[in-house]
Length: 480
Image 1 (cartoon, rainbow, N blue to C red):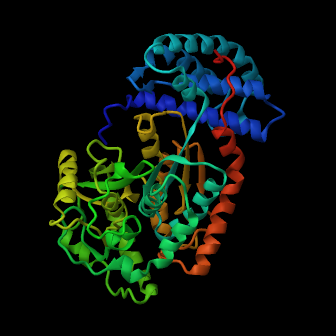
Image 2 (image 1 turned 60 degrees about the horizontal axis):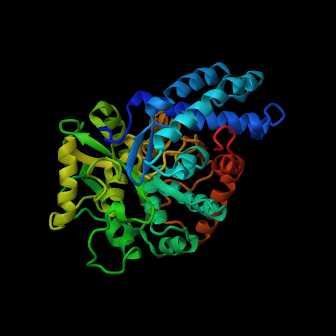
């Protein structure tokens, strides 16, 4: 994936990610081993980690490159944390005695780095911005794909809203991309409003017969009627202009898969014939799609080197793409769900055409092939400066983790390795144990209420870590 121009090099991104995981470990230690680490030691070390990972400060006069200033502290902190077993999420291997000794090493280096940053920032940006980058995190959410299982996010979003946690950015894949749009409609979450939208949906309204030639996507047995079914809840005007991603109330990054020319493992027209016998009047017939979807994914995973992650809302030139188009391609299951842009939609067509040509992409499909729980996409968006601050807590939610009783076990197992790699960029991670089934695309009224309760209940054990990370960090060596 071509990196946005403001993103630092991969080696520095790796160091930033490592320092963030060190901070998570320190928070976990204060929660689970409070008798082994005192609050002052934890705050001192967290402050050093937050300062060490700083590489860019964004202010009203532009960006300030802080890499050279923070590099000495970063080098010492990474080595010292590793020596103490910090950053591996294994508290039993953490050297707590070593941590107390470490504060004596990092304190003077933290003070010196802070002093140099203040001097560099003078007349360039307000001191409050520098303090925020060290002492205050913003919340970013990554919502994974998984069909109807993603309705569990209703409860998760409600849980966050009730705790007063507003996301500054939402990343999503497939059903997670749709919930990202739901959440991004307004600055505040309204679960009743989202429940009303879901209650108004029906399977024949959401899915239809394929009715257009494939221009950007793959053919499929059914057409995903996203604009017809969802867009009216965003704007009642059927003739409203496209809704660009950068016009949403909350920034979003939506993951899709870009397929390069020559990478398709079968002739494109065959994707329209992979699945047969579906009757949208009978939802149970959707089960007939399972073998075809799994087969299509297996074939495409075998050419994974010819696939590339497309992050709508992050990749250069993608911010103006229509939000429903981005979510539609993110959820377009190969062989099952066709999504495309009609050629008469000239503005939408042109925006996407320019992006795929620049990237050398032949076709777009479901993002589960490249980043099914887009914590990596969220991390890259943060570090590129998309939300102004680069100090954020990424909460990654997975509704499609492998389950032995699931008919989708083969597919869940296929995506699990890349989910694991992407989850490494998250601070708080949760794989839901009791989500709805992937084929439960339109839950019943009773089912929605149960989903709302279960989603919130499953996140409750993560509340202490979320609260610790999101609470303002009291300064120790960076008071002045």
